[in-house]
Image 1 (cartoon, rainbow, N blue to C red):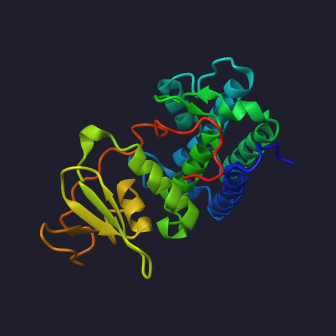
Image 2 (tube, rainbow, N blue to C red):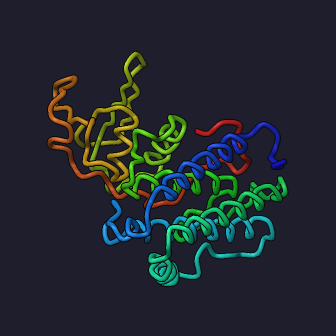
Length: 270
């Protein structure tokens, strides 16, 4: 049984991660070895590159869990160059080998989560970029990797398949980590049929409008803006053409975590 602090978000995120990983493995199992050489949605990467990264990313999170558990600084990756070289070396692996490595990494990560002392979830760790963040957020980061890179495989899983909880959490963190010097959008209006509109005011700039799912896909580079509309100044809303006239979204994931996360694992997040 996984040991978590009492009444926190961690069991729910771990359950989501297990489900997301199983869905990813099902997609990978449906591919042929020849399919892995096809381009992914990430420039310069084949599907094999994406799978190699997903597998190795599990080990990188294990490094950070080790840091949190032992107090000994353990970098997520030895270096960016080493990370890139390892992905390149593994990209041409067979489907069977990619499957085995992703499954093995997921199992070892789950075991490390199970064995984490409760106090260690509050320890501060740091990825390849600042800011430092509490260890409990590593489960959110790993779920992010699996959810977005599943789409990047370009193998039938799309933003329409993201669970609502994933969309809500990732959209929150995307906006919370938005760099202040790259505010290409001043206002985001989120709408869902039958629900209250949610407005995020970010500063000066144009207003864009769409569902949370469509907005997240556009802001993270997983769509060209389908379902997102530019709202002309002085008008409440225009349907327009999907993606027409949209500014470029700001750089995504300039920070691996929001800067103001609670140290203690919260009951709910966001």
